[in-house]
Amino acid sequence: MENKWGDKRYKSLNYFLREKFGEKVFKISLDGGFSCPNRDGKVSKGGCIFCSSKGSGDYAGRRTCSITNQFQDIKEMMAKKWKSGKYIAYFQAYTNTYAPAEELRKKYTEAINQEGVVALAIATRPDCLEDEVLDVLEEMNKKVYTWVELGLQTIHENTARLINRGYDLKVYDEAVKKLRKRGIDVVTHVIFGLPGESKKDMEETVKYIANQDIQGVKFHLLHLMKDTNLVKIYEEGGLRFLSKEEYVKLVCKSIAMMPQSIVIHRLTGDAPRDSLIGPMWSLKKWEVLNSIDKTMEDNNLFQGLYFSTNT
Image 1 (tube, rainbow, N blue to C red):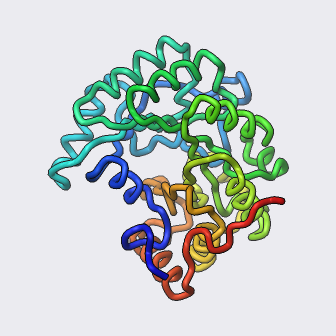
Image 2 (tube, rainbow, N blue to C red; image 1 turned 90 degrees about the vertical axis):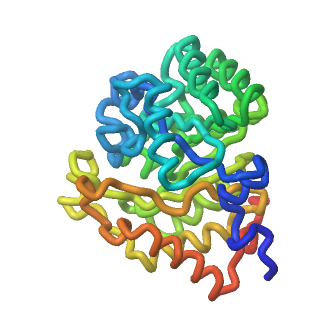
């Protein structure tokens, strides 16, 4: 197979951004100081059972600092490694559309006005996209390329209840439609290794999202971190960690199930070493990524190979 996407057998985010902007583009992870309806009691308390105390923003800037200060601090750190490039302002921690529209507009605008920013990425929940918020997102998308990340994780309602996701699948479906109606790209998060899910369950989630009008996907490995509600399930024997081999095979097959139009934003996640309980093999991220590339090469797999519609 002749690789369509540079040195990868899939449409990586790096490839997509270089094609779109003509150079390397880096993510600057920001903490907008927002909360989450799944933590403050509006939907639930305690958040999703796998979510860290930092609301999945463990590598974002410090929320006590302004957006500008966070951006400059991280930009300076990155400049030591890479000398040039453009930037994505990435609102990562907690739910980044869970605030009044004016506050969102102010913080997003501050972020996209930083020198070198060519894109805006917003991580949020499908149940936090009121019309006024969508207006702000549409406004931003006219200024810089904007995408919204939705944490679906699984299509299975029993798992969604177990992980305390706090919304039904139809809420996700509606959110995708609303965003796409306004021309905003959608990136969906999926987690492999959730408690009680079989390989078939995980593949059903992948096939479902492959047939949605989404433009990107993030595949995550379930990390068990200290001080999360998932620890209790683990201690009671209700959680089995995927092995590295299982995860790699699952990701490779999932990539092959994706249509070639979808950008693969992530193949595995990070968790801070000092708070990770397992699986410990996930700390060697480059080994995992190299294994995925090698497995796809060895088995002649490529994105789109197993894609099929639901009809």
